[in-house]
Length: 302
Ligand SMILES: Nc1ncnc2c1ncn2[C@@H]1O[C@H](COP(=O)(O)OP(=O)(O)OP(=O)(O)O)[C@@H](O)[C@H]1O
Ligand SMILES: [Mg+2]
Image (tube, rainbow, N blue to C red):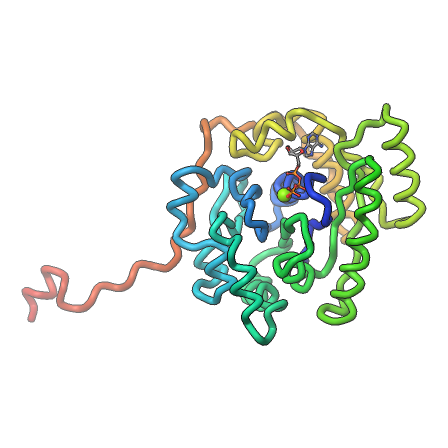
């Protein structure tokens, strides 16, 4: 049964998508079956995995269809260049879906929870990339999750924003999802030379105590470059500081779940050599069986 984790922070540009792509990639490389749900109309996780351009337009289904009840998760997931890692993609058309969702009278906050319920036994981990705001999408994500993972850069505004997120978590816990836990908080886009970043880290440690991960994700240019190649950083620049840091975050997160894994040996072996990748859609349905009498031999026998 998958553990469902929302990567959430109401502040924009704090590394939610970068974390979803790279943490999920390492968890999958450790042999777990992983689904990444893109519930942000910006579709950054989707394009970050190489589902871009014409291929994006060719997607038959997206999370929009799932949320509207027109497609199942199984019919919609896409493969990625990482074995065992699939994406439930989002595109800009999803932007208007909040209005449509709001018009649903009942259970509009639980649409994603219900949809993912049908596939939870197919995966070990489901990560949800949340949008940078409090809206029906982020509420759906938190309602569908077992836990929230919070990326936290070392700047003052991010520290201010964390109070809003904790308030949202409290409200969702009270009204929609009593089991929601804090998976943890970790420092990201971190520059250890910055006094402010160190002060913010100390403040976060005071608030969150043991929930704070030891791993800090450094500011690393390769993490920013990788999505433009449609690749997680481990396939773009496997030995970069950003790649190693996300591996360490995956190790620490798995350890919290009682799973001990060692650092992957020979990270270089994961470099992607297939050119610009294109995620392939898993066929939505098995081809319909041919009607009897359409094969030549069958026609002869009639
Ligand atoms: N550790 C890092 N080092 C350097 N750049 C980073 C790092 N993490 C994220 N970035 C860059 O910062 C920008 C914002 O990151 P990202 O898109 O992951 O944030 P987000 O929280 O998902 O944003 P949004 O709120 O818009 O969804 C991106 O350009 C990304 O490449
Ligand atoms: Mg994002």
